Image (cartoon, rainbow, N blue to C red):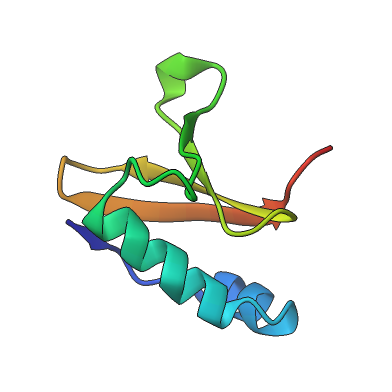
Length: 82
C-alpha cells in the first residue's frame, strides 16, 4: 500500500502545527496495519462517499480515500471536532 504525496497546502499545515513527526508515525502505522488501535480509523458519514479518517493525535484527524486497495490519498488534515 502507498500514500500519494501530500499537496503543498497539507505539508504547510503539518509544518505550521508541528505535526510532521506525528504524521510520519501514524502514516507508517496506516501502511503496516490499518486496524492498529491508535489510528482509530473510521468510515465517515455518508458512508456511500467512501471517505475515511484516522487519528493523528487527540486534536487532529486526517481524512483519506482509497483509489484502489493499494493507493491512499490524503484529502484533508483538520482539527478534530469535540
